[in-house]
Structures are given as structure tokens and as C-alpha cells.
Image (cartoon, rainbow over all chains, first blue to last red):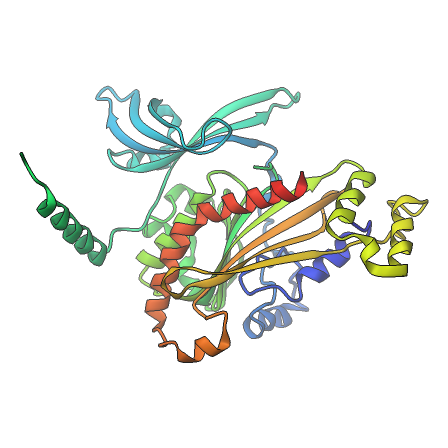
Length: 178
Length: 241
């Protein structure tokens, strides 16, 4: 690869790729070019539209800031919640990670691991993801932590429910009791 | 997966950017009230652009495009956000294409290893006498300087035909890294559309309504999202080894 990286890279990415290719920020928006930038995202479907903020707006948190590594990711489904409220139980299926992918486990997970804004979603049957993350503290020592994130999935449509009912009836008709 | 992996979804279609304000997303249960309150407005042009930072993701909605990206696990959250907002929000959106994008940044640590990788995927010898000049600049005194030559981009594509009339392609694009002087960026674009890859076939196909196409593409997004990341990771690992 050539040593001249940044200018050519952004130029290459701006030209001949598909409409659904993600493009990094290319243009800073200010009063002098706002009209041009607005126009570019309307008229050119392949244009980069990932704006950087105007100078008068607060800076966003940079997305590329993560200095941690995901060791494992599990897909979970809540099976029960303890009455006293310290733990919930769940079935886990391995999504990512060495020795994890494809594995099935039952787990007891502390409710304290669930963020306060996700507590309303902690119900039997709801889905979540549990990530095991390797990070580093200020002195550079490794830290392992877990993150529980409840999924906010679309509501079932009437059509999907009707199809499921129909499928259930078909299966029930095929059942034989001997 | 690499710590600097970025995952994004890009949808092309018709959207109402005003319907994707943090407050409206929270009202629809798409994000939590806490995330809505702490969201940063990066750009807001009523009727034209909504761009917000949610801490764990960045969302940009224009009248013809929606982009969402994240670097933090679990990446499925951006897929859920797209699926729920397009299914549950009152302002109806339609889509005609979508792409699942994964960006890998890899630092080789020195120019020798990076040049060896570049030479393997784009051999200078394929360029005749000029290739010899390129090769010399990669090993001589110009190595690592602004005078070094070599590959600036390699773009590989595999088109595919999927269920329900969905077609598309898997692109892998290698470019020098912007972040690391001795690194590369490999960008994966798993593009999906409702247009036949063969123009002759396209003329004979029964046209779908926007709603039908949207419904089919959303099903494809939901079923393909994690598989696509997995496949992109596998391709990345295959080429980098």
C-alpha cells in the first residue's frame, strides 16, 4: 500500500461506491457552505451526507473513541425474575466470542447489571444482549466487565400474529396422541 | 472482532427527518427517555436533516437517506432502532435499498508488513515496467515517505440473488488507513435492493409498491444483519492473515 493515505482515501471513497455505502465525514458545515451541503445531499444520491457539526453547535461525542474489546456476546431471554428482586434468570445463546458462539447456557444475572432506563423492559420473555468486554483502567491494567442491554424490538403486526396463529393451528392439527 | 470496528446501516428511500427527533424516538419506545434527554443534536434543519448523537450510536436522517452507525457492542441495537422506528413510528418511511456496512481498521505496525500486504493483494509486477518503479519505492529510501508508491485501493465485489426478489452485492474495499500511518481500512458494504442484477429480467418483473418493497427489505435487514457482520469479519480475517 502507498504511504500517502488520508487525502486519496477520502477522495476514493467519495466516487464510485454504492448508494448504501457508509461514508465518513468529508465536509465541515458553516455559514459559507451550508447551501452547497444541503444541495449535495438532496441532488446526489451517492454523496456523503455525514456532516460534521457547525462551529456554533456543541461537539458530538466521537464515535471512534472505544478502547475496549468485546470478548463475548450472548443473546438472552428472561425466564424468571426473583421476587426479592436481586437476580433474574435467563437462557443464553452465544452470538460472538471464542468458545461462546453457538453455546447455550442458563444464567442468573444480577438485576443491578440492568441500567435504570432498561428496568421497565425486564419482563419474562423479553430479549436482551449480554456483552463481556475487556477494557483498561487509567494505569493500563485490564478490566473485564459485562453489559446488559435490553432490546427494543418492533411490536408484532396484526399480520404476523395472524400468520403465527394459522401456523399454530396447522401444527396442532398434525399432533397425534397415542 | 477488532476494537476499532464500526458497524453502520444505510437506508435509501423516503424519510421524514422531523420524525426522528430524540423526543419522538423516546415517545415511540425506540430509545429510552434517558438517552433522549442526553442526546446531542449535531445538526437539525427542520424538514431536511436530523443528525443526533445517542452516546452509543450516531443517527442521521435526510429526506432520501438514513444512516446509523455505532462502534459499541451490541451492534444489534442499531438494527433494532431502524426496524422499530420504521415499523412503529407514525411517520411512514419507505425504503428501496439498504446496506449493512462494517469498517475494520488494522494497524500492521510498520511499513514493511503493510507493503507486503499491499503487494499480495495488488502485485506491482502486474503493472509491467511501472510496477518495477512502484516496487523499488516500497523497499528503497522512499519507503514510508510521501514518495512511496503502491496500491491506493482494492475493490472486490460478489453479487448475489436472495429470496423474495432481493438482489445485491458484497463489496470489500481496501484503502490506506486514515487513523494509522502503517495501517489499512477494510470497508465491507453488503448492499441489498429490489432491482434485478440483469436489466433484461428487470423489464419483465412485476413492479412492487413502495410498501411491499419496504416490507421485503426490512425482513431482509432483520434476518441478514448479524450474518452480514459475521461474513464481513470472516472475509476480513481471511485477507489479513
